[in-house]
Length: 153
Image (cartoon, rainbow, N blue to C red; front, side, top):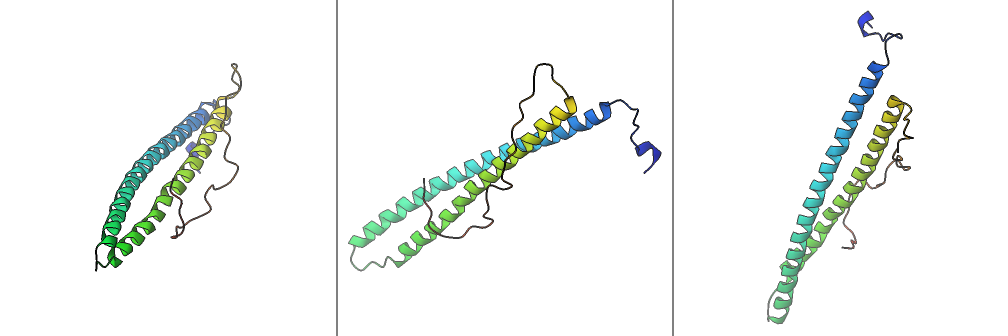
């Protein structure tokens, strides 16, 4: 370490305060990015759900029509319905991702609040409200998605 890189113990406390403020800004930027990601995922999920319901309705109608027609092979329609049902698994992604985003957002927000309290010291107006960090390390234990029974909301 060079002499200029060493921290002077007699230097004013502004240096750590500036570092804390910069770190706090970075953490807040990360939480804002997570909020934007959450909105993008929600929009994509709503769009996907709309298309899913439209395709499901259309295929169901075709299956009903084909059932009353003589000599119509519905194998392709049934196969399409199974493929569509398998696509529902992808909708689980939005739920899991949302839980992870919210969890990470809360953890970062707690860090920001704690950093502010430690860097700023005593507040004559009272203690700052600090968001509690999530107790569990991870809200989603699943790290992959498999086809299976899915309940649509």
